[in-house]
Length: 68
Image 1 (spheres, helix red, strand yellow):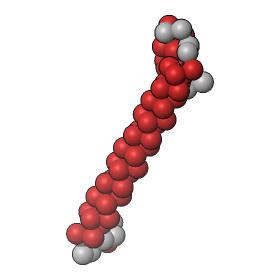
Image 2 (tube, helix red, strand yellow):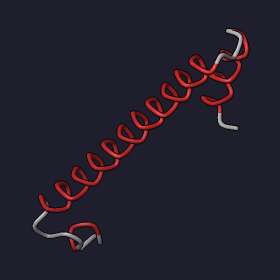
Image 3 (cartoon, helix red, strand yellow):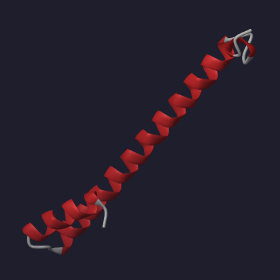
Image 4 (cartoon, helix red, strand yellow):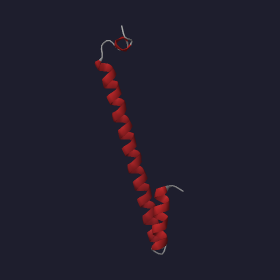
């Protein structure tokens, strides 16, 4: 079980575990997971754009790094 699911499961156990609480916790877990996934996709996209921009700036790439 992942950390988020474990934490939310413990919270559900503390509150009595009614079906409404369980549904709310599942909704919160999926929302947090989607937010985390979106955040990681954005970070990866920004990193790739930065890399492409850095490589595009150097007119002599890769020859400027070979020491000649």
